[in-house]
Length: 255
Image (cartoon, rainbow, N blue to C red):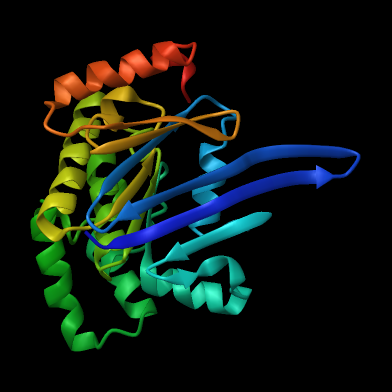
């Protein structure tokens, strides 16, 4: 299977010599095309910092990050902005939808920014909204739909440009349990049906059980990794809880 993402000895420091905080220490791993990778760890473990470095929102202090063979740590800001639009999709906890645009217009905005021909946009929006089961709300505004529908709209916007990597930062954090389960099922379907590579940061063992591999971070380093393999989601969930217990905390301590 083709490697899509590779991190080599990534480190991230904050502060100066007199007061230096090491958020990430020597992290290396790779992700293959079509993987659904979860990242878990306690508050302060470095998982959000790591995601920010991969997403180019922040810059690593040392090491290299390669996306589809391109070293993004060597890029200038202007190059990064273009690279981000062309290659990355983002799903955030708070949706980040524009309330003055309809659901359809929110999804289409990603295509417009990437200069997609106007004649192609309606068909693309219809196609992706069918996959995410939001076709019946396309003409509504974000304030007229549920949190789960908003997040599926955010997913549609994130993947409509066929990004090489979909980054999800606590995507179920603002959802009730039913909406969260629907969203996670949707993400799993995107991964399976479209082959979208997903990297998801989550504090929740239930959410993480939808991934097929999990990296556990502790004190800025990889503590261990867990692969689902042929296990059922229930079995995988139990294994996740066992690792969290081994790390010294239950599910409520992971955030």
